[in-house]
Length: 116
Picture (cartoon, rainbow, N blue to C red):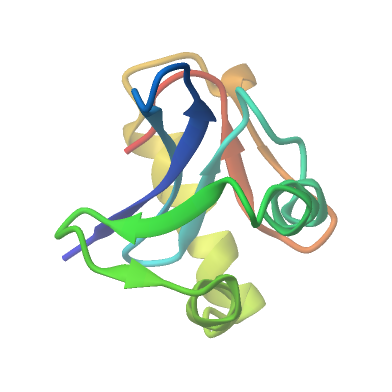
């Protein structure tokens, strides 16, 4: 079973109207994968969340909040072999073109557009 993760971003607002949006930032299952629409690597992903910590609440698909440290620990719990196995599974089963997927330097899968 997989779990999706989101960054709930507070964009501010005027007159006490809060504007938020949720970015699909990652997914775990047989491995860990990330959206390449916003990030090119695990390090980019982590830096974005650290830099925007005052504006971002990390949640999973069940609306449970997590700290960045907790989420990083979850993603890092997948060893390189599992990360590669997930990429290989995507390569065999993806309905989209494989050029939209890549492994970063740490072996994490990234994809353009919505990922599964």
